[in-house]
Image 1 (cartoon, rainbow, N blue to C red):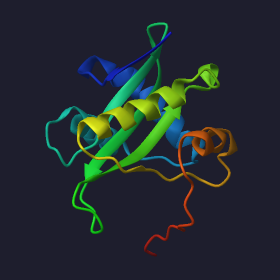
Image 2: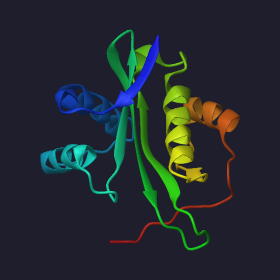
Image 3: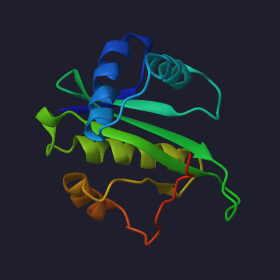
Length: 147
């Protein structure tokens, strides 16, 4: 059974485990200070900060999603950016990722924010198979500032 719920302060260890798994998948790391500030922001009440939902499978944290509402130059209403989505490998293929995305869709609808978008790596084929079923791929290519 999959349950989706908001992040709570007691989730620190499991959130850290899941987010570390996400970062490991993308072969990146962040300093401990980023873990600390991100977790604090996820629990804060600033509307500019991200929100986190936790997926539980049989009562155990098994996935997370971080999302944010923000303004958009082409729309009057805000849009929703789904930044991080991670499902523990032990429960993949059981509908956890889809449940997390649908929970973000529901939060966006409740906020009057119909547009939800996210990015992924082209090599993320397992996740992209899900995304292709529940979202529309766009032709946009992302660029990052050279530092």
